Length: 424
Image (cartoon, rainbow, N blue to C red; front, side, top):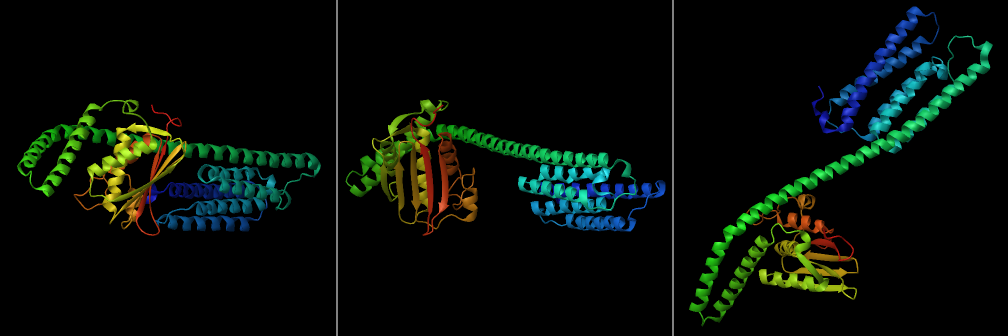
């Protein structure tokens, strides 16, 4: 009947409230029938029946509303509970007010609100139910009983019922709100743990594939090195060709060194993968390596920071992560990449700015996901930013992407420096 309710927890709760209200309406009708046929009592039957009919009509509208796919908001659910409180107040008003034993039913909508709604709605419901109860202490249609012989005792009894209700209301509101908050925090922690576990599985899979690719690429790279050496010998007199061959040989050498380091360091712990370097020297080495890998990339670099220069871990993973981010900026840039670094004794801030078209809304939302790429098919694997973000987070840092008002995008990297984070 309501197959779409799995999409929204509040929709499920509203459906449960709809069913609970149906049970309440049936119970009210049965109570009316029993009292009317078995107890000789005179109460405003017409008014009470009208209240139940109105409540049933509103519940019918709720049934129609549940068939729609509109999302249920906190405010809508709170209003639904408020309808029940007002209907209960009307029924109690016509049947003895605070002296009616069903007065404790006020705790039901309060408990539901505390378990399903944010704290401000819960405390609002607590205030409303206490206010209704308090008004029913003084203004109601009394039941036809003679309490004149023990007015003082009866007044104390009613006052005690009211005090017990107020205390129960406050305790339920406080306890359930705290419990709901704890449950929500636990759910968030579980979601984060699942996300980290999934990302670790993806990283392990990528590492396995990378190790296999490293073995397979070794032979063709060696062949390319031999052929470029022969070409360099054959065309000694062509200066322009010699320059191109020299660049190509440097690229092949770097690829072979990268594969050698990848295989040699596989399985080592993070502390074994790098020593400590001054942050300015570390960044200079990374940029020099980037110029070697990508000689066509144009960039400007500006560095400012405190002295003496703090140190950062000279890690292969960290260096590779920054190279991935530089390459992404160069791919997106139309002319030049601007790189700013600034550090104090605790934090390195690195801004990588491209002058491209900027990121699409989808790219901004999904940036960092494994195998998602905003590049044209065949031009990107969608793992560079994913691995860079994962590695930098392992070192206690963060990566943030955003569009600039003047065009282009900025990749903002924050890394803690040595002495302010653990390496294990």
